[in-house]
Length: 331
Image 1 (spheres, helix red, strand yellow):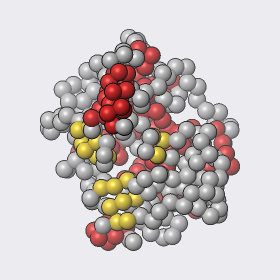
Image 2 (tube, rainbow, N blue to C red):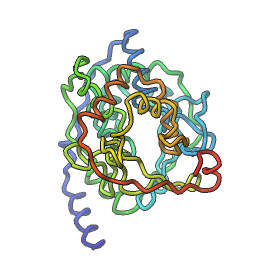
Image 3 (cartoon, one colour):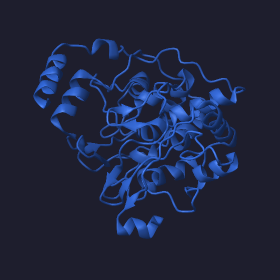
Image 4 (cartoon, helix red, strand yellow):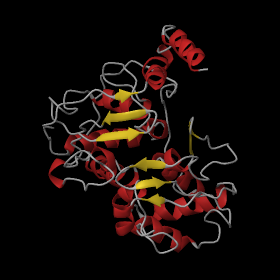
């Protein structure tokens, strides 16, 4: 089976199918306005929680180390995913020319964010949730780029390391582009007067499905009956153990159906679970960012989760924490 998969991947890799995924960049320079800086900062720092991965940690461990305030969005961390990748370099998003994105054009950055295509045309890995960011509106992606230009440049002192991918994922991700989508174009903003649609937009660009719908083959699509019903397998790291993303559907027994909206919002903002225990990684890493999501957006998110998402019965296994994590987060 592995030999057949390798042969198929190799055949696709040599077939040259990258054209439909890579659009030519334009020379457009995005106008800098106060409104864009504010909106971009809100998206980067709260809804999309970019610093949760991209802000430097002392030793590069996202799960167990706090974000360095002096190295905001400076990169240099490593992401691991058992069986797929043992070490994925998280890049510097600051305007530093040598180690960051200071030499990138505005549209090169916009293309990377929404389409997962780097400046030189290579495919980004799906650990960056560009499949979620493809739904960023045209105005919002411009705001994000404008904001990223405004943050202090940080020269990342660590030398960039080569991504450590297993053979099959390396072929599928870097050559075939199984994680890719056709370029995002003409994406409108959500109707602010339609709570369910606004909530869907917030949930989508916050990449909720990247964890809460994750299967061995990637996140489920919104039309899947088990969409947002929890992760199929655990998120695993020696610093915390094993954690399954919870069921976010309105199923009353295995999801969030029996909880009131204010309790759901409190849980998102505080990182304290419905049972009173603290959330463990990876969600605990996101909470400092999600805590600042605007009230209107949180209200809309809860409406979407409670009234639009279909209930799905899926009992997620209890977390299995190592002793040090139990001391920090509870059993």
